[in-house]
Length: 91
Picture 1 (cartoon, helix red, strand yellow):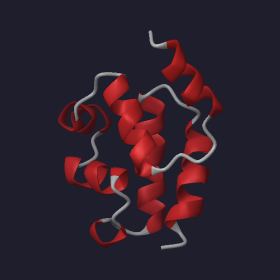
Picture 2: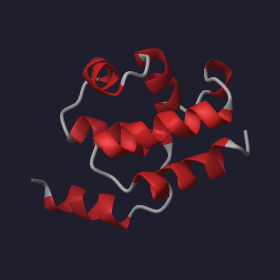
Picture 3: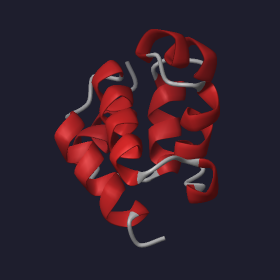
């Protein structure tokens, strides 16, 4: 375990796509493997990570996908989804 990364994760408040990607990579998940486990198309996972609203469905679905990603990565899914959607809804 990387203590610095664990600390960064535990103190994170923003939860942007870029940081979700960083956590996914830190926990050794490929987009494909995560997609298979949580049953969300890898296209959407990538779009969430780069925060590309043009390639994402309605916000209610995006929130659900972010919740699934967070749960699988062992994160507080409500906190992560709330923080992600706060930014996402501004786009």
